[in-house]
Image (tube, rainbow, N blue to C red; front, side):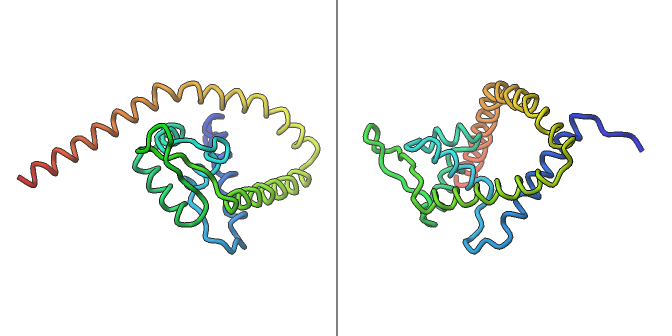
Length: 175
């Protein structure tokens, strides 16, 4: 059996950790479950109250219309509020509701408790190894963040081109 490369194994373990953690936390929740993109948007708005939809889309690497759809869903669920931007009435400013704040707080508390419990069950050597890996993981995350700018712009351009092609195709079909 060929051993996996370190980068591939690290990626697989981090994704697997996140997936299992989400699945464990979702079990037993009475409220309707939120999709990952909805939670990401709520976390972003919680950290940056009054953010515009377009800025949220840029931050999350999503198309404006995708974020608008998420906003509509979360407003209907009572988790997000939107107000007209006083500087540009066409734009909306986003705010989390008290329900969203409570839901995020409860989720974070459950997540922390679960991970703390499992972390305590590890051997001292495993806990020390994980603690020693944190600075390297932070640097790896930061290096990925630094590369987001050019890739994000390229994704936006490709998305705009697809929309333009779809629009032109629809116009041709109408005539």
